[in-house]
Length: 214
Ligand code: CMP
Image (cartoon, rainbow, N blue to C red; front, side):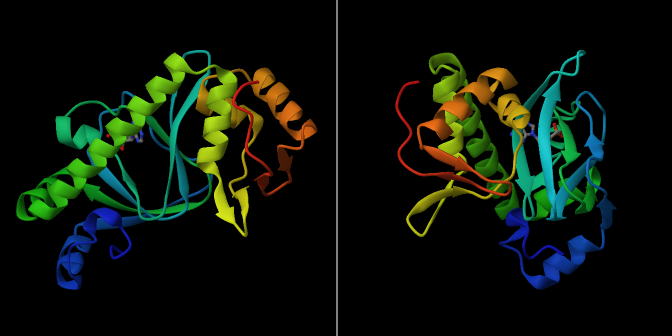
């Protein structure tokens, strides 16, 4: 189960087999809430297959999407490190398979394997950097700036074109950049009209460099 999980990549097959003994494999249907912000819990989740959304919401149901995670990534480590509540909620975006590890087993693995602890620290450093970048965008960019940055960040070059393979709704995009769906919809329409992007059912193509300003 573990050879494709980034945090355990430095271990050999024998160590993987030992750790796997203290894990349970679980399959979650699409749209299952796995953790809720504020919960107390004591498990680490390794994504073997599928995709989850990391998000926050308020009492009116308004949602802010922090991240998406896919196979090979993990979540639920923060509250195991600082013995605190879950910092965000996690929901499956599609049917997903997880290996679930107890807090006790996770702590034992960290104590015995400094390489894993260093990997975890590097991942945390990257998370802080990405949050710093988000704060910068929220504080210094307008909605158009945030949207164009996000679209360009999601795109991957394919045969000379920038393609976004992920399917998303305009509401999801709005939740990701902290804007209203109406505003995202308006900008999207104008970008399509100007020939900057083409939007299909399963992919979005960025045809040319997006304008610096709206
Ligand atoms: P934990 O706080 O235990 O439970 C929620 C999990 O969401 C958290 O651990 C992290 O694994 C993950 N998480 C929280 N905030 C972020 C973020 N900004 N980016 C990516 N993942 C996050």
